[in-house]
Image 1: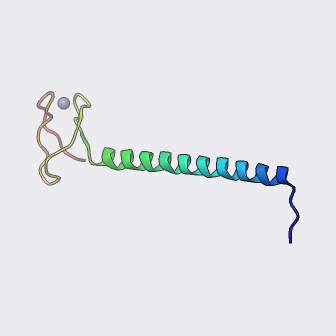
Image 2 (image 1 turned 90 degrees about the vertical axis):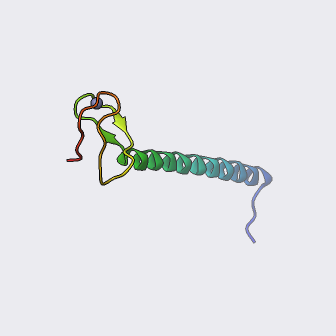
Length: 74
Ligand SMILES: [Zn+2]
């Protein structure tokens, strides 16, 4: 059996808990960044005024809702 003092045991538990919280926080941040990236990929950008909008259908791109310029995904 491994002999561990009560001080070392408390230190291990505190460091382990802090490490777990840090890991969960980092994973949550990565998930948020990935979700924002996926949403950004679906957006179209107007070549004239750089306004970003979500087209209703991916096959047909509507004109820019801000300035009315035709958009094409190229
Ligand atoms: Zn525009």
